Each structure stands twice: as C-alpha cells, then as structure tokens.
Length: 214
Image (cartoon, rainbow, N blue to C red):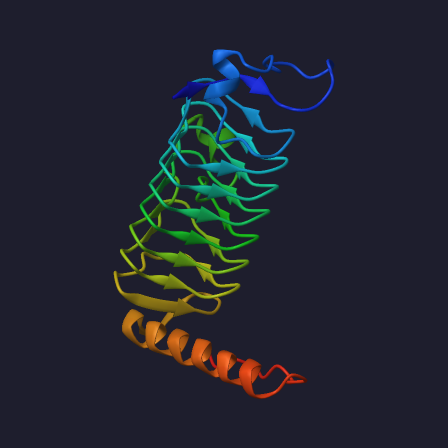
C-alpha cells in the first residue's frame, strides 16, 4: 500500500490525519504509534508495526512483518525487507538497502556521505547508503560508513565502527571493526547464553545476573 505524505497524531493541528473508517485510515494499519511522519510514495507491507515518533522519508518501501520501534529516522529511497526489526533511535541513511529478517539494534547509525560534507563540496546530491543483506545482525550503537555492504547473516558487534565491507557469515567488532569469529560460533554462544540464563532462572529465585561471554 502506498501512503503519504502525512503526519499522524491526536488533535486537529496535525496534517494528514485521516477520519476513522476512511479507506486511508485502513491503509495505515501498520502504524501503531503516534506522531509518525510519512513522505510521499511510502509503501508498507502487511503485518508491519511502526511505533511512536518515527520519520519515514519519500519513496521508502517497507516489507511485510517489519517492526520499526520509536524514534527511528528512515531517510528517502530506502528499501526494508520482510521480517526485519529496527530498534529505537536508529538512523537509516538515504539510498540504503536492508534485506529480509535482519535485526538492527538501538542507536545504530548508517551514513550516506563518505567524506562529509561531500554533497556541498562536490554538488553530487545522491551518494550510496548502506547495504545490509538478508539475516544480518547489527548490534546497538554500531556506526556504518556510506557504501559499506554487511554480508548475508553477518554480525556487527555493539559500538563497532564499520568502514569496510563485512563478508557473509562473519562477526566483526571494535573500532575500526575487525573479524573476530564466524556466525556459526556466534549462534552457538547465543544458544549457550540462553540455556545458562534459563538454568539460573529455574534454579535460583534470587539469582544474580552473570555477564554473558561475547
């Protein structure tokens, strides 16, 4: 469904508020929160949830079953695949491509300007954003340089600064980001952490949380 431009929110002072029961209001079924700004030509798939204080620029395509948490800014000309989750306070730069079943943690920043302010100094208006391929995970607070490709099922660790492409099935961390191990190892450690957590919860009602191995 194609939407926008509109600003949703209570009260008559907000532009683009559709009357209850209208076809336009039915098309907004993915918008769960208030004060969601939609640019022109926005397409939202079935079963998608968009929460409070989200900005979505023009010509953005969002697939089915996507979750976009509060305070997310999605610039223009972005594509987001089915089943992806974007956590709060994240910035998705223009001309970015996010695949299916990705996880983008809170406070992630992607960029579309490799040497700021390149638009002002060169006069070139459109620069490539970031590509995040199917099944990739970008953890909280990561920063990704314009033009970088995060490969299929790759993982970017918390707070990493990514300035080069990340190969598929690879986990990177640090500043600048470097390979630390494989996605297979990551998945194994994820499972071990979940099992340990459940055992702690079931055996001790006053358990003390232990640090999780990264």
